[in-house]
Image 1 (cartoon, rainbow, N blue to C red):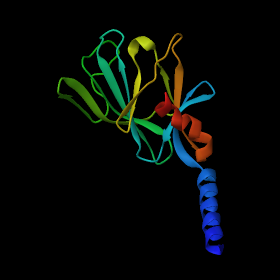
Image 2 (cartoon, one colour; image 1 turned 90 degrees about the vertical axis):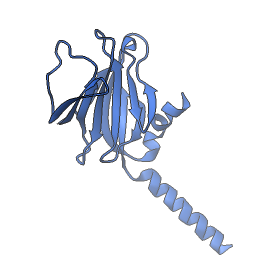
Image 3 (cartoon, rainbow, N blue to C red; image 1 turned 90 degrees about the horizontal axis):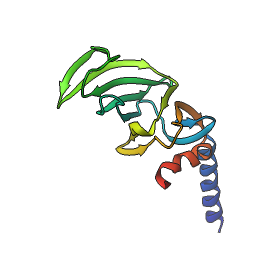
Length: 164
């Protein structure tokens, strides 16, 4: 009987500690509301993909969480150059399978703001999963940032992409 109580107490203490220790989360907010949350440890990567409004081709930007809990853009790829597109960025620009790829950008963009217009089909690619970001009119302005809070505070936004 005593072993059972000790085991239950140990489990309870572990659960309380897990739920109260601040962890890093990649949080996507629409205004003050947390829309989504994902684990945001140092080195975590994600992609934002959308269709360019003029070229009608997909465009991707790649991001990484830094050791300072910030978001940096690491690279981009797109099909064609257009107005406002730099001829090079970062440390390398090359062609790969029909895409212009620019890597080594490594520039902080924190917080990252994205206006996710429905016509451009904005998507987040995180850990191999694609999550739609665009919805209705007016297009939402989404703010991406790294926030350290306990699991219980991030849980609703953490579960949202998998329940919708």
